[in-house]
Structure formats: C-alpha cells, structure tokens
Length: 326
Image 1 (cartoon, helix red, strand yellow):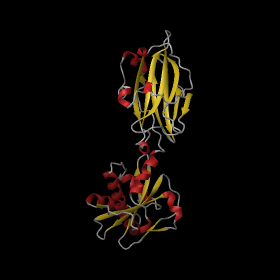
Image 2 (image 1 turned 30 degrees about the horizontal axis):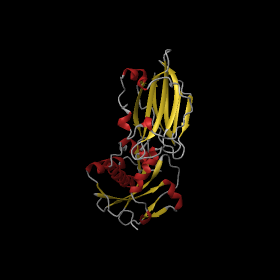
Image 3 (image 1 turned 90 degrees about the horizontal axis):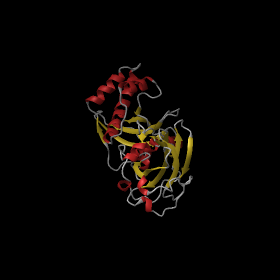
Image 4 (image 1 turned 60 degrees about the vertical axis):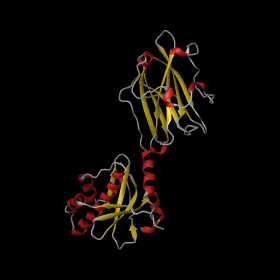
C-alpha cells in the first residue's frame, strides 16, 4: 500500500535551484555534478518540510558542500542540529525503487525518499526508512515499502531523548531569599502547579532521611515549585518539582525538602525517574528512583547558608539540572 494517503508536495523555486547549481559546479565530473544537483533539491525539499513543522535544520552552503565533496554522501545529508542527520534520496519519475548503499553512518537517523517531477519544479515526499530497518532489506527498497512520513516525526523525539539537557539556571536559585518572600522567576506557588493540596495527600511516602524540622511550625516554612518536562517524548507526562525550606535552628542551618509529583491527568511518575542531590563539587549525596505506580518522591537534607548544591532529574539518557545556593 502507498505510504501517504495525501501526497505532500514542496515547490522547488529559485532558491533551491541556485543552491543546487552552486554545489553542482564544485564537483569534479559532470556526472557527479548532475547527481549532486538532484540530491540538493531533495535535501531542500526535506528542509522545507521540517521548516513548516518548526524543526530547525542546517542548510548552510558550507555544510552541504562538505558533504558533496565526500563521494560517499554526494550532498544527500541534511543536518538537524544536536539531533542527527537525514539522508535524502531523489527519486525520478521512472524509478520504482530506492537504492541504499551499506556503510558506516554517523548520527544518521534514516533515509527519506523524495520524488522529483520531470521539470524539477516540484518534489513529493514519499516516505521514510529508519536506519535500523535497512538491514532488513537488500540494497533496493520498493517505494511501496517505505514507511509513512509521519514515522519520521516519531523518530525525532527518540533522538531528542539521547540529548542531555542541563544547567537550566545560568544563575543559581537563591534559596535564602525565599525566606524573605523573594522568589526567582519560574518558581510558582504550589497551588498554581498542582490540582490537589500536596501537603494533605495520603500518598505512599518514601523518604531516605528523617525529617529535621518537626519542631518548626508550618508558618516557618516556604514552598515553591516548577514544571519539569524531560523532552518531547514525555510531553504528556510532565511533573512538578517542589522545594520546601524551613529554618532548622539558630546556627544558620536550613532544612530542605524536595518533592516530585505527577501533573495534569497523570496518576504516576514515570517509572525509573531518578532524583539526585549533588554537592558543589559534583558528588552525589542522596538519591532515589520512582518505582512502578509511584505517585510521588521525597528527599530531605540540611544545608548551611552560602552552600551550593544541584538537583538532577534523570530519565533514561536525559537529565535536567537545577542549581541552588542556600
């Protein structure tokens, strides 16, 4: 069956042909120049499609020229910064197969087939083949066996998940100011983040540290939180990080309680979500992971004024880091 029920076309105007001409003229032979011309039009078509979806690509002349001068690629590769590459294959009207050559691919996500019309004025995006699927075929893949183009979009978040996201705060959050009701941007009242009164929930509690602030009244503590989203794949599973402070005693010590809750309509945290506290040298002090059907996590520790620490939230290969100073 065809991979796309509704054809997806991209116009190939002056900009596309100017870029193709500039790259083709740099080639060592007329035959390679012709192939680079067609490849560049295919790359341009995929670039335009991703641009419509607000996905950034690198269509710079230098990047494609370097690819075209390497005979293994012939200007087929489109770079998606910090994510990976797509190999874009032009298909002429008489072709029924996509030919893929074996080799070593770095950061390659897969292959996109683009059908060019007879006059090279229009490109039709036919479908996608993930790199991991290529081993299932000989070198030729029938156009009818291509995966729908939507499958490409499913793969892009998978690549995002391999990227570590860190240091969200260039300036550490100053927690001591919270006790004076001065709060950093992005840290909101708990009631604005959660649809339930977090302090009153009868959730299963797990804490690896005994509470140090049992003698403190509720009025002596302050809580703020923010929404955390570890990438596109978890867009439907964001969670809230809640930080609670309380004056421990008279020697400039502060009790700190970290809590993580699911948000929106989610009942549980992502399984194996890891919460870790690191000291200012980067050494892990305490940590815990969400178990199956875990609906909150909590860590407690004590720090002194002027001390720095980090909070890491990790799921799979993705980590978000928040930096603090007491």
